[in-house]
Length: 397
Image 1 (cartoon, rainbow, N blue to C red):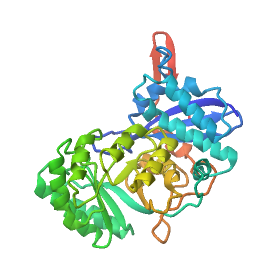
Image 2: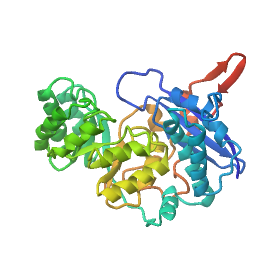
Image 3: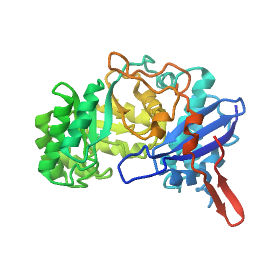
Image 4: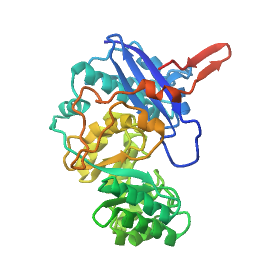
C-alpha cells in the first residue's frame, strides 16, 4: 500500500497557562494510505515547531520535510517502518527537531501496519526481536502535579487514594523553589494523603540543574517517606552531574529520561548517568522503535524501564505497546489529570481493571481510536505562507 497523506493537526484549549501541563495543546499526526487504512500518532512537543518540520520548504538535501519524505512511499511491513524512519531522519539530517517531530508520524506508521497485518503493535515488536508476545498487566501510577501548598497536595493525594489508585507521582509545581522544609512538607503530604501502603514517586522537574549535592541531600531527606524514586532532579543533559549523584548512592533511586529526544541521549543517561529507572516518551524520542531499543538497553543493564506519558490515551497506547511484554517492567505512568482535550481525544481510553491494573488492548495497531468529532472544537486553524505560496494549510479532521 502507498502513503497518500501525512497530516499534522494542531489542537489546543482556549487558554494556555504557564503550568507544567502538557495536555493544554498537542500535535496529532494522521497517516493515510491508498487502501483506506489510516493511523494516528501524537507528539509531546511544541506543536507549531513540530508542524514546521512536516512542511518546511527544502533548504538543501539535508533539510527535507517529513511529509515530502513519506508521501508516495510503500508501507507493507514492520521493516518498511524502519526503512522509512531511516529515510526521514537522513533527509532531515540538519533539522534539529527532526526526531522529536517525527515521533507522531512514526507512531502512526506502526498503527497502520498493525491494522494491515491484523496484529497489535506489541506483537509486531515481539516478532521483530524474537521475544515473547505475551502481554502483562501494569500497575498504573496516577501522574499529577504537586499542589501549590502541602495542604493542597494532601487533598490531591487523598482524592487519588479514594479513586483506588495504589500508586501516584507528584511533580513540578513548588518543588525545589521555596527551600528544603517546604520540599519535605510536600512529600510528607503526598505520603500521608496516599497512605502508608501506596507507592509514591517524586518528580523534581529538573529544578536543581547540575547541583547534584542538593539533589542528594533532598533524596536523603525524602527517604523517610519511602518514595519509589526521585525523578529528574537534574537537567536532562547533566550527565556528569547524574553520574556524580548516583555515585553517592542516594537512599532513594534516581529516575530520568523523559527529556531524551534521541536513543543516544537515553543511552548516555543509563551508561554514564547511572540512573535506576529510565523513563521514555515515545512522543519525544522518535517513536515506538527507538523507545523499544531503550527498553532492550534497560534489560541489558538490569534497570527498570518506565513510560513517560503526561498526554492523552493515544500517547499512552504507543508507550504501553513498547514494554507490554516484559513482566518485570510493571509500572505504568497513567495520565490521571489533564485538560478536556486530553480526556476526550480517544473513544476507548484505557480503563483501570477491578484488580487495579491496566492491560494493553489486543487489537490491531495501537488499539485506540481518535474521536475526531469530540476534538474538532479544539482544532486551531493554521496557514503558513511564504511570499505568494501557501506552504501549509491545516486540513479538516
